[in-house]
Length: 237
Figure (cartoon, rainbow, N blue to C red):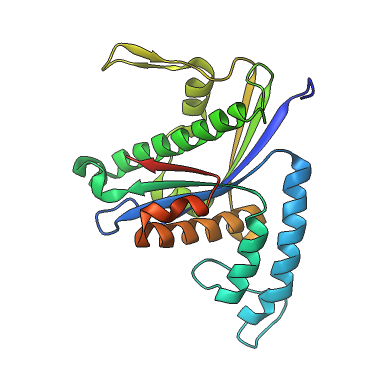
């Protein structure tokens, strides 16, 4: 590794909501290890989208094509995009809603805090995994660029995700219930940039939407068969 700042790009979107009406809610995403890798992904993904998007205009194409999402994509087009996505590092977070405490499900504020906790867990596991694979060095400066669909922000709410990540990754967290310290995992400078993006303008978030929907469909069918879909999975609670 070089002595410069290490940049990791994490791109996430959700599928399903944390509610008693749904059995599972999911976050899916893509991780890139450099801006060059991210830009390469976008160039190829955009090329495929441009090739297929006019098929979603209902014969009224005016070069203002609708966004291609997991909810409207045709199976053949989905396979084509997923084949491209699978060349990169995929992550998934599955929340088994039926196992979440009822008082969390019933409170909007508590749901938001639980989602915050869940995303922090996912991002921490991503960083731990990359450290274990020597993709990043915890003793050198790290920058995490996290892109999340802004619509999921409106529906779930986030409660200072940035500060929670800094605290957990760099300083560790005191568990007052058990009088113990959860140790930090990053030992140098840590910079975190969180961006809530319009999926219609972000190809990485569009890809995360496709992933999240695909993972959720598989999770509803059979949780045991999930490992073939992603490089790293977290299941909560």
